[in-house]
Image 1 (tube, rainbow, N blue to C red):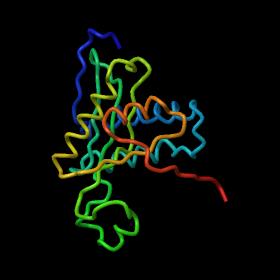
Image 2 (image 1 turned 45 degrees about the horizontal axis):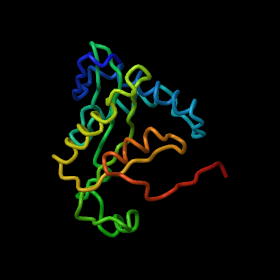
Image 3 (image 1 turned 60 degrees about the vertical axis):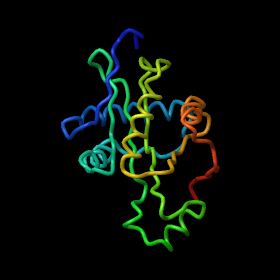
Length: 171
């Protein structure tokens, strides 16, 4: 992205389904290229997932554009709204969290190769955090695939530090 190109970030609408789905597919391709060994969700299933969530008030899809071209997106949401989750279950799932404090989650954040290195990811993350804080979150969580140092750095700049390591595999 040219540094002189105006960056705009806006909330995605239902009309942006194709755009967000295409950016999501680029994110998956990027993760696989970085060595991610998870099982990618089929494109049509991902599209249905995005379509169901685009209109929800507790989910924030934000799209970044420069010179009219989409260059990134972030998906942030209330992880488990505390009003819908019994305190006992909340404590079992999140023993280190206060059940009275809303927890936000960054499901996905992606910047195209053309947009990297220009602060697009930082702006997307800041705006997602602002939107989630307006809904009452006090803590934020995200998962990062091993080796994605750019994402670790992005989250660290926002004050999020690694707290756990997950393992996963076929059994």
